[in-house]
Length: 71
Image (cartoon, rainbow, N blue to C red):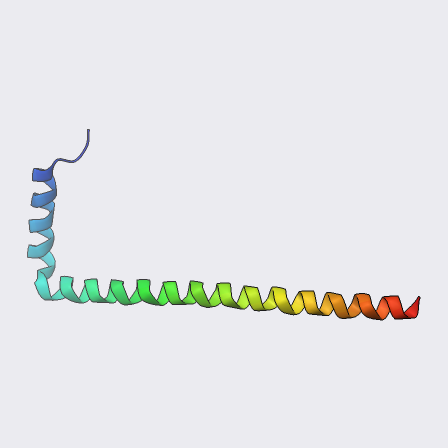
């Protein structure tokens, strides 16, 4: 029930005939740029999360220190 190599080649030829090589090349470069941007955004999000956690721990320490001074 799987797709054979012959069927994949036929599909590839049909796609090339319909869209042309120039459009497929542009599509490939656009897809590559999108993946690169996505990875960069994920990396930035992880960095922001780490910074937020560090700031949160610092604020928790400051609040705890103030509470201890009051008692």
